[in-house]
Length: 543
Picture 1 (tube, rainbow, N blue to C red):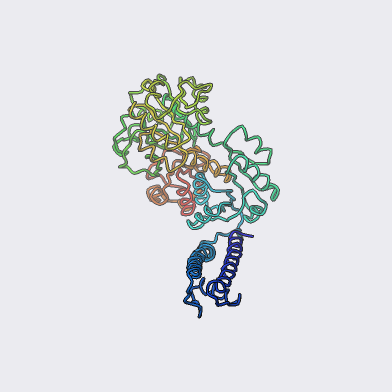
Picture 2 (picture 1 turned 90 degrees about the horizontal axis):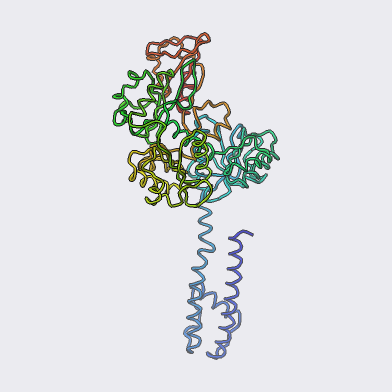
C-alpha cells in the first residue's frame, strides 16, 4: 500500500469514528438537555450537515447551553477535518497530475552507454558522449533528482542501477558499456548485476580508494578507474615542469615534431601581452593551436586574448622550438631546481603529489589538519599562521590538494596574500569551482569531475586519441577527401571547424611545415587537433 492510500485509509477511519461519536453525543443531548428525543439516524444526519456546512435542518435553535457548546464543537471539528482533507486527498492528486512523469525504461536503444547514477562528475562524461554522437541513458534511483534531470533534457530513467530490473530497463544487454560511479560498495554490486545480465558488456567502474580496485576487478569490471590517483600525478606534473627546463608530456606526431601544453608562469615576460603581441611564432617558431584562459579552452585562441600567469598554451613544433618556448613561458625570475613545494592536504591526492615529488628529488613540506606519518605541519590551511610555519615564503609552488572546494578557494586567497609570486596549483572537486579558484589567484586548476569524466569517456570509447586525460584536446589522424586539391588557406579549417591541421602524412612521411599555401593532395592523411566538438565537425564537413 503506497503512502497516499495509507493516509486516505487512516483519514477515512478517523472521520467515520468522529462522526459516529458526535452522532451519539447529539442523540444523548437532545434527550437529556432539549427533551426532544430524535433517532440516531437523524443525529447522524445533523452531524453530516454540520461537517459539510449544508445546514442543520429543523433542529435549530437549541435552548440549552450544553447543546450549543456541542454544536460549536461540531462546527469547529468539521472545518478542521475539511482542511485536513486538502493535504490528504487534493494536494497529492494535483501534484501527481501536474508533476513530470519520469520514464522507467527505454525502448529501441542500442550501442549506448548506461550511466549508473548521477553526480557532479557525470556531466563531463555526458558531454563527451554527446560530442562523439554516442547515445546514453542515466539510471537514477532518486525520484526528485531523476525528475530534475528529465526536465533539464537528460536521457534518464527512474530505476535502481544495481538491480536486474533497473539495468534491464536500461537495455544493458544492447549497450556498448556500463559506467558505475556511485560508491565503492554500490559499484561492485552494479558490476555483478551487469555481468549477470550480459557477460560481454563492457563495464567501467570508478573507485574512490585505489586499494579497493581489486574487489571491482574480482566482481568482473573490465576497467577500474582511479581518478584521484591521476589527479595527484597531474598536479605533481605541473610542479615538476614548473621547476625544470625539460618539456613535459607530449604527443609525437612525426620525427622531432610534437604537440605539447605549456603553462605561462607568473615570472614570464609573456604575462600581460596579447597572443598577437607575444610573437611566439617569430620568437620560437611554434604554432599555437589552443589555449586555456582561466580554465576555459579556446581553439583556435583569440589573437587579442591577454596572456597571464596560469594561461596554458597548446602548441606544436620541433623539440628545439618547444624548448625555446618553454624558456619564454618560465621567464628569468625563476631559479630552476631551487625552492620547495608546499603540499596542503594529505589525502589520496596529496599523497600522490608527494610521492611524485619525492621520486623526482624535489623538496616538499606537507600541511594537513591531522597529524600523521608524512605530515610536517599540522594546522588549518586557511590560517595564515599554519602556512607561515610551513615556510611558504621560501616555496616555489603550493599544491592545494583539499577535498572541499570552499576551503580550497579560501586557502588560495590566503596563499596569494602571503606570497604574491608563488605558483598556486589547485585541485577542484567540481567543475563549477574552477573559475572561482582562478579568480582567487590560482595559476593552474584541475577538476576531479572533469578528469573522471574524461577517464570514463576514454575507457568507453577506447578509440579516442587524447593528449592527456586532464586536458580537453584530441589529436586525431584521419583522412579528409573533401580537402583534396585545396590549400589550407582556401579550406579555412580553423574558422569552419575550430580544429587545426598540425601535420600531413604523405608517402609515408609526416610533413609538419604547413603554411597557408600548402595544398592537400588526394590520399594524404591529416593530423588535426581540437576539442571533441571540433573534431566531430571536421569529420562531418571534410571527411
